[in-house]
Length: 129
Length: 216
Image 1 (tube, rainbow over the protein chains, first blue to last red):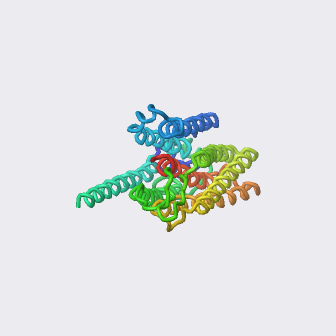
Image 2: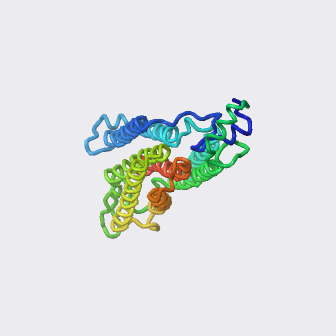
Image 3: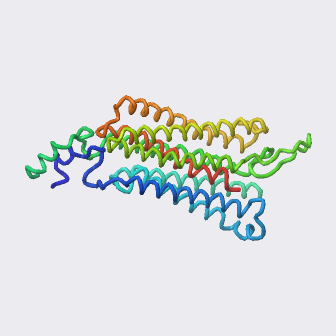
């Protein structure tokens, strides 16, 4: 069936999808498994915080400090990607939706990094006189 | 296109009018809105990060601070346990709303109403958690104008909380429509759009939680 035909376009799915890109949505079992992974990743984030800066974090906590922020960002990015891919159905939906979502995120990330670097440079320059 | 495929096209009722992209324009609109919201929250997160650790007076998020004039001690203000619970609730609500959507798409009214109700409850608990947290912080001396942490914290989490509140109101209207039997499998895309917004407020919190509460 020609996906580009007008007829095919009109059928674009009872669930509002582009049939040219559509696959079945995940099952409740898959959703539950993703939910469990998200819960575990959140527990790991808090566990990492407790191990690094918590009341009982000892010398091992100090060793973890250089890796704390990168690990936290990695866990956060994994959770973000899982929700976007499975719960927001970007994995199965049209690539146009992914583009419309990811492009602003790239700009947003550039804005955040640029401002943080700019302000850090500004502060260092101010201190140096 | 074959005659058979043409017959199929008529057998399946389209959920939306024909568009040049072949996609539902309402879904494209909500994704575009979500894209613009990403940049909105990026500006607030940038604001929080560039002012992080630059407060001249307490209360501070992770350290105690003593006022040199009055010798009053301000304890660290962040309560990780409370916010972790709120985070878990928001994550669970994302799971619940996709299960509600699955129920809507399959025409399972009981599943739709049950999981949508659970999503709304999680959203309400999260908003309640944030109201409690804000009140608690104000009682501990942290206000919008007290220091740079207070200003950037209340603006960032306050705007997120407003988004969650609007999401809860949207989901409640969806629940009322579903209760009246107006969320049929053909109209499940209406719930899908509300669910996309709800997932968005969840992913924003996924970023806010480590940046604001965990990073020292």
